[in-house]
Amino acid sequence: MGDSATWLLVILLLLAALGLLGLAVLPGPDGSGEAPVDPVRLRAEAEELAGHAEAARVEAERAVAAAVDARDRAGAAERERDRAWQAQEAAEAAYQRARRAALAGREPRDTDDAARDRERTVTRAALSAYRRGDLSVQEFREVWRRAGEPDPVQRAREEVVERQQAELIAARRAYDRAAAGFRQLDEAARIAEVAARALVDEAAESAVEAEQARVAAHRYPDRWFRRRKATGPAPEPDGD
Image (tube, rainbow, N blue to C red):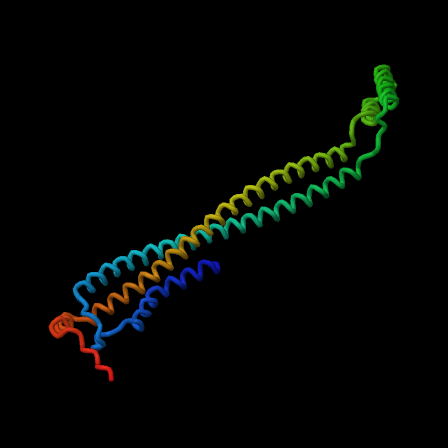
């Protein structure tokens, strides 16, 4: 589990404890001259806030779970992207080795018209000699190979280059797909984490409000309300 998932879960576990903050900030029925409070209204408000806090907590839990899952999927995609990058690097190295071997095996050949004319003259002469019986099949093939056919070893090298090039192209495409997939899932995970943070904050605030309302409702029982209503607020002391 990543750091982002960890902080989300830790914050979520603190939601219940945050409600205890209300215990330190609420006044009590201590005869301090405050106006009468309706305990029925307080209890109704406390129940309403408690319901809202519970709904916010459940929604925050779901958001945290979704964020954790999204981050896990993004992490898996990131590892897949890294593997695709390594495969691409290996394919690039193999292609370069094959290419160097093929280049080293290539012999410079004349490409001007005179050279091509000489090759045609040699092959025609060899064909005439073969027909007359002056050349064996093996000798005729050797003349033909030297005139125009490539070396079979070099041909094999060139085939390796073509194969490695095709593998390199496939590896590059695989990396591009993996990188695009990671970017998409990483963005989705970031969005989910932002949403989870907002819902965790809302759940924390709701928990505090609900706890404050609950404590207030319990601190002002019906008999205290009836006594305050009958006697009125305590008189303020006269000044000298």
